[in-house]
Image (cartoon, rainbow, N blue to C red; front, top):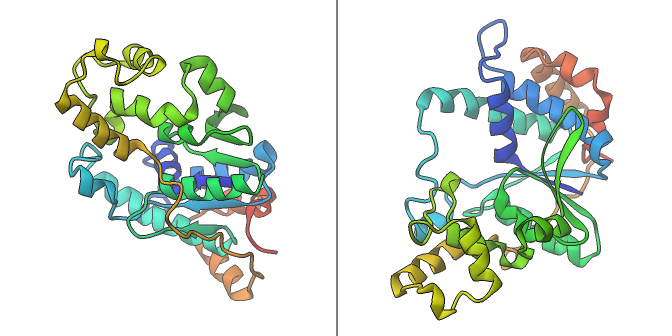
Length: 280
């Protein structure tokens, strides 16, 4: 099973070809790159199924820290390029039988965490597709993370690789991020100069070890950061949609969108794209 961080996926697709347009001037680079990446998944990863998980517009994290992700682009020109294509991409996925899952107040990484724990409990193999380093906390012997690929070279993270390179087990990864902060999510570190090496030393001994002199205020920042970086793995009922029979009406609408956005060469000539769908 591949669990794909939808928002992460579409933004990476967009930045690969931000100015590609159809003949009538509509932006389509996200759709071209996204479908090309999707069509490569069956051969690269051989999944039995793929699910796309999406952020809700309202995140529970913003109630804890209003500045959370406050550094993300507010450029209306870029957003106007991305979001219309994102809506079309979601529709294409749905019509191709690939499930989109979104839950109020949760982000894609929370949904991935919940489903990963459920699938892991059933001894099913899970591939997480996202460049989000928060998700490294979910690594297990049968859970891996693909943070990208290029020319069939896959950038793979496993439980053993995290231990080898960072000397940190996945369960301690949220604490590590809470110490050093996360610029991509606008989460500051607990103090100036708190970087990866110092955080690794603290975690190797004890966060409470007096020699590190963590103040009460810094402790509060750490606890807030820990809540922000920890991925939810329980407390919500998130079900995997069942596979359904393809309907002729779906096929006709999908064909119309493919032709309308000049995607026929990407979509129809890459037959492997159908192998990741949810149709029976």
